[in-house]
Length: 174
Image 1: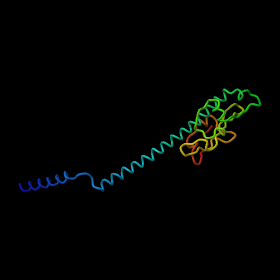
Image 2: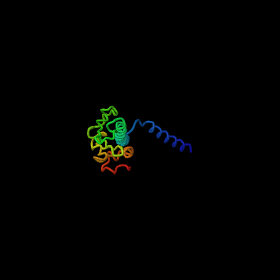
Image 3: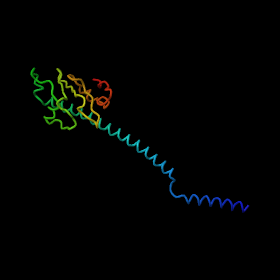
């Protein structure tokens, strides 16, 4: 009986010595850890890249809405647009708004082609050709239709899918 107990203790001692003698990881274990970390890092980089691009696109939507708000202010403070005469200019550009000091932005590529139209009721609409704004390497789609544009409610309801989507969805409802 004592021999059996001693044999069992000897086996346990040898196992403990082997476990204590192990130093570090084997090459295969180390390689597995590196591969797992690389996969996690790759997923993280892609996810962060998408978040950054979405933030850039949201900033462009905000730039469009800010430009429209500045144009509303330009329309209300510019007497030549409000005098009711037949000779009054019923449209103006984003360049006019910026020259008047109502908008200070470096985001726009071609401010002379961003148009604001004043309808017969005094309602303001906005048109911007494709490519006047960029989010990273993505260029914006055409905003509105040349000659008519989008209304204030449509501008306020803009989404990044409308501004950058391919194909471009229908504009926001009136």
